[in-house]
Length: 112
Length: 114
Image 1: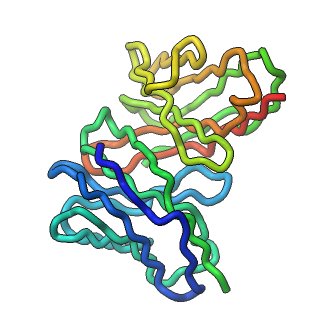
Image 2: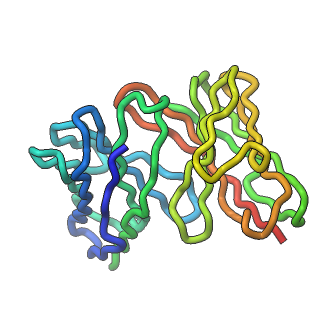
Image 3: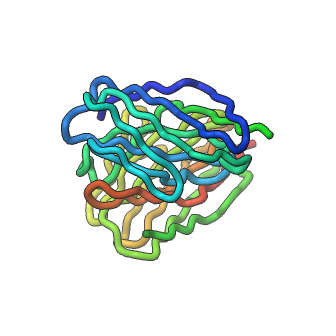
């Protein structure tokens, strides 16, 4: 699976958009980009995933560059409850049934 | 979606002993995964458990230390054997999903070895 690079930490003001970048320059054509987050002491929570096109759901938007070498997770109106570690993961769709290899992630702090 | 229950949620164990962690899923799944999260660190995959076959371990993890059972399509156990304080971690169970869909995680077992 392709390796990802994320900033170690970021701050965001409450109510503002949080934009979390991820570099995956070695991504292959059949690898999806997944985002998970982990709030302190809880199991990871799925946020969103995409292959080529931008995606949006009730939690966030995922913007993938045309060359697919980087992506940005957007939380449109961050709240204090969005404070968490955010993981960007790329994996082959049928990689052993869903095995995920986690990097170090970005620790997002949403401040009042 | 899948709901995953792990037991115990936390435990404090003496060094040299073993602990078995249970993972129950509310639906049948082919693959189950076990992760370790050491204090302040990211998640590290220990092994993949496929029903009816031996688990596949990642580099750095061995069956003697982390034996895994997978007796059916909804249940798995991970045993942490001959524990030392370095084994103090959160252990998480996960189930994968199909093409292009999400994986699900249990809430983890917080293990402290004293």
